[in-house]
Length: 205
Image (cartoon, rainbow, N blue to C red; front, side, top):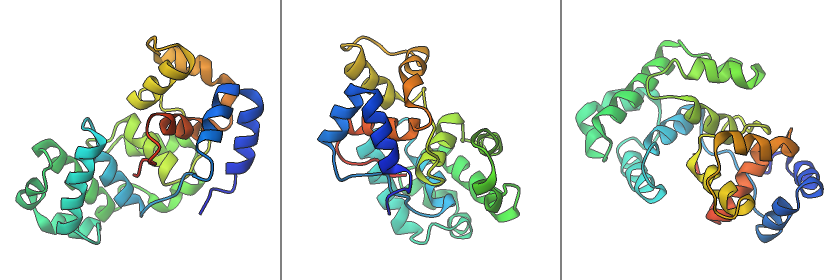
């Protein structure tokens, strides 16, 4: 289901930013879709850290074969050896197991997240091993569907801004923030379409 703010955001962004307007016209009819429960979204984001989209998909497919329900209890029951056999690094096995334990023992407050502001959710998530700000921002965009997240450290966003706004010159985090001033309060939407300018297939987390 399309986020309720999506069309309003597109209209506002198109009025303010001709570059984004062109990108959005080239990718009409697609939009951000929530995929999976919170644990699944976070586990998938951990799987995708520091590897290509294609490699992440391959590992995730094997992960799903081992733990089709993708529940914390199921993941903990697998054990480290089974998780490693999915193609996960030893470090990522530790991270996903730690995430599962946080869900099982209730040390993170999933039910409260919809009412918490973005920075409060990030502050809670980064207490989990292997979840840094980037992973927390992906969660805000893809699971909580927050409309105004700007993941400046995301390499895809940096590349897209470089190509679309700077003629291929590097785009620093400060540059991205400057370019994004006109996108508020819809920076998640702008980011999502800039990702589409690099890869028309929507990213899934």
